[in-house]
Length: 198
Image 1: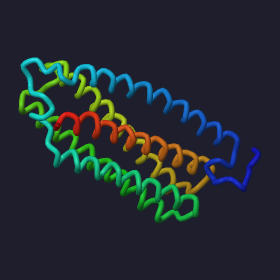
Image 2 (image 1 turned 120 degrees about the horizontal axis):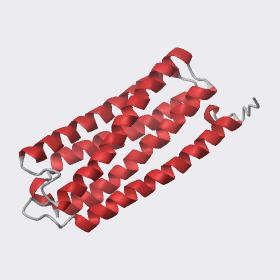
Image 3 (image 1 turned 45 degrees about the vertical axis):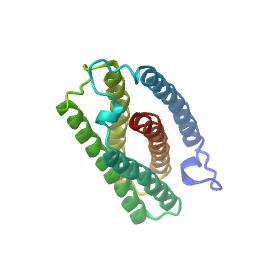
């Protein structure tokens, strides 16, 4: 295995570089998925039928809480990758753990939000608007859940093996995934919640 020590650990082998490229291609497919969901939502956002509209069910407090947690978790994820590149295992574990805890907090608020909607008779069956809203938010939430499971597994692997070409590559790819989810959330915050509250 040819190793280029002039590159960061996660890129030092050809296989690792190919994995990163492959993951960028995967994210391209994810962009298409979310673009489709946003297109559907923006087509149906005013098709409320007899159900409530966004201004009637959205609350800015929980949304700002979700936004703060997810965007801050992106920062701590970046600090974890920086710690990894410096070979600092304890700071990496701490920042990575904080990232996952913030992701868990985000998910908790989102689940509470969904339960609140259902108690207000705003369900996936109420209107086209709510169907598209639940599918868009639910798909993003499912991606966050997957990220939490993936990140938890990575923490266990790094704790056992330390920083290797493999664990560094997986951790870097995870960071790409997590930053992608944050970018999607910025679009949700802007085009779903802010638009809906106006």
